[in-house]
Every structure is written in C-alpha cells, then in structure tokens.
Amino acid sequence: MNNVSDNLRGAVFMMLSMIGYVFNDAMMKLASSELDLAQSVFIRGLMATVLLAGFAVYKRQFFYRATWPEMKIILLRSIAEIAATYCFLTALFNMPLASVTAIMQSLPLAVTLAGSIFLGQKVGWRRYLAILVGFGGVLIIIRPGGEDFNAFSLWAVAAVGFVTIRDLMAARLSARTPSVFAALFTAFGVTLAAGIAAAFEPWAPVSMTNAALLATAAVFILIGYVTSISAMRFGEIGFVSPFRYTVLVWAVLLGVLIFKDYPDFWELLGISIVVGTGVFTFYREHRR
Image (cartoon, rainbow, N blue to C red; front, side, top):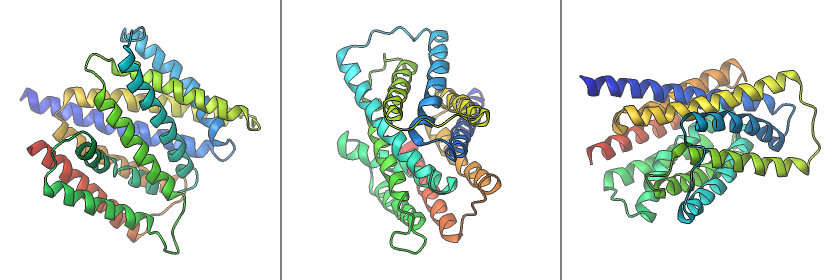
C-alpha cells in the first residue's frame, strides 16, 4: 500500500514539474515579443540562479568541494545546457508552443539510443523499433519538404541532441555529487553565457509586464526542477516517467488559449506516435 501511495505522489510531482516547465516556456515566449533571446535568458537566469542558490543553501548543498573529474563532467554538462537553451528558445520564439514541446518529447527515445551506443546499455529490438517509429513521429510533426515546414523546427531537433548529451553527462556523475549543486552551476553558466551575448546586442528597455513575465518564468522553472527531483525520489521510474507526457496537454491548451495556435491533424498524429513510443520504451525499460 505504501508503494502505491509513493507512486501516486511521484506521479503528482511529475505532473507538477511538467506544468512548471511548460508555463516557463509560455512566459518566455510572451516576453520574446519585445526582448531578444540573450537578454530574456539573462534576466530570467539571474532570478532563477538566485532562487536556486537559496534552495541550495536550504538543502545545505551550496558549499560542495567537487573533485576535478566531477567538475569536468559538470562543465561539459553546462556547455551542453547552454547550447540546448539557445537552440530550444530559438525554436520556441519562432514556432507554436505545442510543436516545440512535442519534438522535445522524443528526448527519452534519444537518451535510450545514446545510452545504448555510448554507455553500452542493453536495448532490445522492441525498443529499437519503438525509437525508429518515434523519430518517424517527429518527422510527421516537422514535415520536412512540405509547404508547412518550419526551418526553426530543426533548432528544436538540435536541442534534443544537446539535452541528450547533457543527460549522458548527468549519468556519469557520481552518486555523491549533489544534484542541486550541479543544477546551480549549470544555471549560473547559462546566465553568464547569456549575459556575455547580451553585452554585444542593443539592450531593450524592460517594461513592468516583461519583468513580471520573466520573474514568473524563473519561479516556474524552479518549480519544475524541484518537483522533478521529488518525482524521481518518491515514485518508481517506470510508473512515474510516462506522466511527463502530460506536458503536451498543457502545451496544446496554452498554445490555443494564449497564442491562438491550433495543431492540425498531422501534428496531433505525430504527437500521438511520439507519446505512444515513449510510453512503450518506459514500459520495456521497467520490464527489463
């Protein structure tokens, strides 16, 4: 009975984390109408880093002496996160929210494939087939060569690649490395990179509306981070992980209500394929 209770709590935390991440994306997309990418990431990053630093102090993980091998992995992870942030937000600022979010949901498939190739993890033929079908779903969403093709969707695909590298680096971290410390270092790196890029661009005045949007984005992204950790701590991965796809429900709703973006039949079909193959991959991993 206790295991069932923990799994339900984990599922709730996973759904809350998805709400946090997608609302952060929506706030950033709204702010992009007046602020460029580097400036908006820098301002949000400052706020998020301060909040995350306070959380690290609360968890007593702010002052941590990392070994040089740990720092190399954290540095590589941060570089991958910087590249992923740039690619993802470039796509987000120029595409419907639901489409970008759907492409990013191929991440579990990409991580499974990369884990098999680079980490030697065993993957059966069923999961290889699911990965192939899932990437086919991404192609249906993107529709390269079609009249509705948006070249910015390739930035979303690139973001999946960089996030995969980030997650592979996280898998190489030792168990003693505090996750909050690694996240704080990464958040600082993204903020620093955005600040350097913003210094070479004209600085647009920040209205109270945009400041509120970026502050809200910082709070939501912190909620996403904290609750995603709680989801993995309380529930079994095989049970909890499929609830990550609830993000697509929110992405479609926010896209329709805020940005007036209505997904067509092919986008919905591609989303369904990506979700279905992702859930199957989690199921087979749990069985294994």
